[in-house]
Structure formats: C-alpha cells, structure tokens
Length: 190
Length: 255
Image (cartoon, rainbow over all chains, first blue to last red; front, side, top):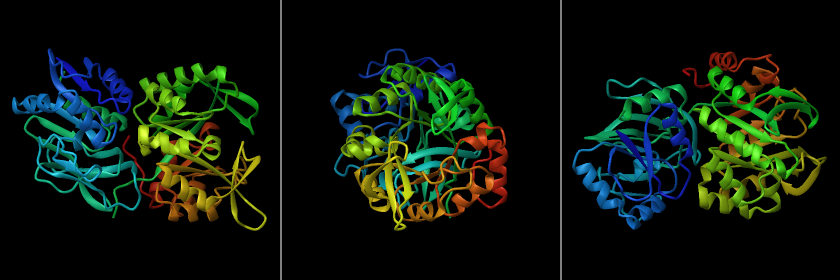
C-alpha cells in the first residue's frame, strides 16, 4: 500500500520523503485529498499550526481526515503534524485543529525557545525501544490520557500519543538517526 | 531535570562540492567527499553536521545544492548549510534540497530583515545566525563580518538579543580571536551569551580537544562545533562523547 504524505505548502517535506526512500516505502505527496490507493496518511512536521490548518481548510482536508480517522484508517503525525490532530494550539489561538484527539497544544514551559536538539524519550508502553529523539518545537502537548511517551524539558510533556489507528510524535523520527529510522519502520505500513 | 542533551557538531568546510581544509581559507587541501564524510560522522555519533560552503563564486551554487540533495538522501541526522546565502530564494533553495537549517552570517548583519522574513516563511527552527565576535581593546565584544576582518560596529550581547527577537532559532557563536588557534573556546563571551540568549547557543572557534568541549558545555553552551580535532583523526566523535558522559555531561550515546 502507498503512504500519502500531505504537503501543507508551508515548509519542505524533503527530509521525510528521503527517510521513506531509505526505508523502501512507496509514497505519494498529496496536495489535495486524492486518497485512492492510499493506505496510511502521514502528516509531516513542517510549518506553523495556523498555516497548516488554513491549508487543510482550503483544500478539503478537514472532512477528508475526519472521515479517514472515523473509518479507523492509519494516520501518522510528526511535530506540527501531531499538534493539528488536537483541538487547538497556543501558537495560533482561535484556530480550530482537526479535533481527532481531544486536547490543547500549549507553549512549553521551557528554559529556551525553540527547544532544539536531542532529548531522551521515556515510553510508557511496551514494544518501543528507548532512546533519544531530535526535537524542534516551542509548543507541545501537556500530559494526556493517550500519551505513550514523555520527555522533560522545563516541564514534562507528551511526546508521543496513540489513539485507535492514530499514532503521532512531537519529535522528528526522520531526523533521529538509526533509532528514528527503526521507529518509523515500525509505524509505517509496508 | 531535563532530558535535553548537549550536541556535538562536526563542521565541514566545502569548496566546489569537496570537503577542504586550510588555514584562513588559504592552501586548501582536499579532505574528501562530503557525503562519505557525513555518513561516517553520523555513524560515529555526531548529533548534527554543519557544512560551510566557502566557494567564493556564485557559479558554485548548483554544486552546493547538488551536494545538499545528496547529503539529505544519505543522512538521518539534521544538518545545516551556511555560506553565501544572500536572499530568501537562496534559503528556500537549500531547504528544498533537504537542508534542515541554513546559517546566515554577513547577510544577517547587512540586511537583518532577512532573519525576520526567513523565520516567518520557514520557521525560526531553520534559521541559524552566525555571530563572529572579537574582543575589542576596551574589553567589549564586537560583532565582525567578512571572516573577522570587518567590524560591524555592533556589540555582541545586544546583537544576539536583536537577532533572537527577529527570529533566529539558534546562534552559532564564533570567537575570531580563538578560531584556528586550538587553545579552546573563549568562555568569557560564550558563557555570557549562552546564559543570556533566549535561544540555544552553539560554541565555535578554538576547540582542539575533548576537554575544550567539556569546558564549553559545562559553561552553558547548548552545543559545540568542532572541525580540526575530528577531521585530523586525533579524536573520534564517539570516544569524545564517551569522555563527556564520564564528565557528567548529558550526551547521546545510543546511536
């Protein structure tokens, strides 16, 4: 099956495409919700919350992603691609997120902004290898019932969530070395 | 309590698509293929890489873009491209080719609005601003351009605050007094700016040993950049990180 990478027009997705090439996955970059033959949707981590949601609204992605999730089909979110799954974000107050998972993205209570660099990831679910991931963000999800991993920088926040057919990471597995490559391999359809 | 780790960043000077080594950009020696070296540094445990394109001519631009494209295909860690970026289109071209960040230097001083424009268009996380400093006679650190030859008239501390406010996501701080000397980082300015800057500070200029990296990281730097100590083969990135870990510095050891 083919992975559909949604291209929100507000940043480059070269890194994530290159990572999928290294993993030998077949993918298509989607500007419009043309989902024939797509088995998993990947929401990449480029751009700010409001810009990505504006693109989604203008191109029919909001209903498309909502019915995709309701049908129980897989979605993988990375960085802002995780954040837009929720109801809203401090980054762009008043802009509605996809609301596929309930919750609010907050500005991190962190010593420096943006949080840039590698940080340890602590899983609270079996089947994931411990390690360090590469982060680039100023916003994130506070503690949440669907949290499967946390990281502490200033405060402890949720860096991975799973709910139904959705899994999402605040960090960038495509930039997290061998560890990230194995994690992506585990979470992508083949 | 923080899970954030300190970063070790090898820096590669690139001239017309080849990694080179020289002193003050003179007597350049070919050190090899950038993609091969990048992959080797990743395997040795480098946390990120910085490529500085020192090709003087604009005809070298397509070669640099092709190199970035190849590096992006091969590398699973972040990398930054610096050198000769003059406008938003340059930034766009290198990010599109696969660079995670670009590093602006002289351009940021002569046209600081490019920092705002770049941050607005591509996000603060991909705009690194290089700040080259020298200690002036009165003890105040000034900001220099053109490889340390030209005094911009700006003061380091106020300039760092200004570019961070404009949207620099990181500061690459180089002491021009120490660069190439191998006697260690200038910790007076590095410590000061690492503590006061609202964004991460990468220390650069003067590192020749793992002890120098330790001093900068203990002094507050968020990351350290080093070239010669790794390229010469005198130190291995992984062994250096093992040493830093023994010294109590949080670094990434599982790679």
